[in-house]
Length: 154
Image 1 (spheres, rainbow, N blue to C red):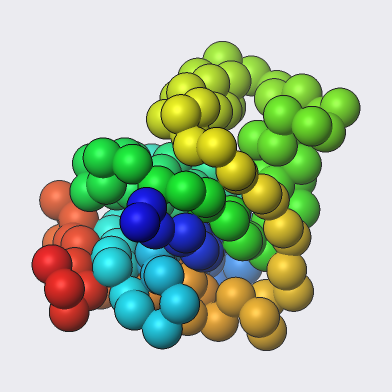
Image 2 (image 1 turned 180 degrees about the vertical axis):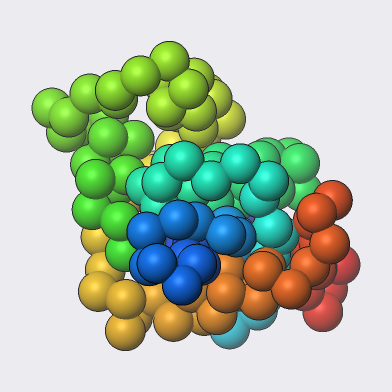
């Protein structure tokens, strides 16, 4: 039976003493099926444009991990605390991506999910996205090349 996956993603930006200059960016995600964690990812990001831009990177990293790991899945349920990202990547919503980079990321996310029969998108409060948030925060301590961890079954 093809798995039904929950994908949670988040991003984190640390700022300098002026609380305006980004000093570090990181992304995190987790892919689960029921109580089984299949994939966790946490990595630093060299270029920090904005927190929203990093949220797109976090979701793209998660979707790439799903695409690389699974040949087929029954459903993917995307959860994140970035309403704008959720609304733009969900093809049923009227929101459109802004800018070349975001457009490329949205196209790749949708392309990688296009063979999945059931894809849902849900914006959550941060309190319900805590695990992905912790993974994103931990990405600040990883080397620039990034870091990913697989779950207990892989």
